[in-house]
Image 1 (tube, rainbow, N blue to C red):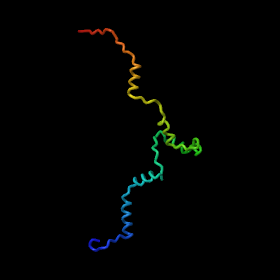
Image 2 (image 1 turned 135 degrees about the vertical axis):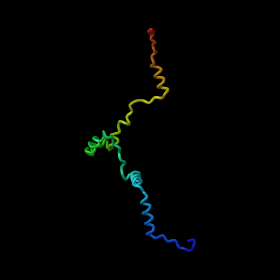
Image 3 (image 1 turned 45 degrees about the horizontal axis):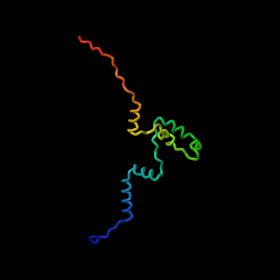
Length: 118
């Protein structure tokens, strides 16, 4: 171009460039793209103690995995207790008031201690 030479980029050249670019894409990048596009389901991390439950879950017929016309996912089943509220949350002020209200006066012991000298 600058020196009067014509720039040529053939179809074969473009295939080589595309191949080199594709070789630089990692397997992890491809996996993440498929997961982001929802082509594949994300893998559920299963604790060792839940492995037996997974086998039972797989053996259940599909009609057993529904509740009120909604399909129950295994992750929802295994993590049901995680969303369970077991107690209230209190502010530091509320905790301090409760402790001050329930605190009983400490009784001092007037027992005499005898120290023997040699």
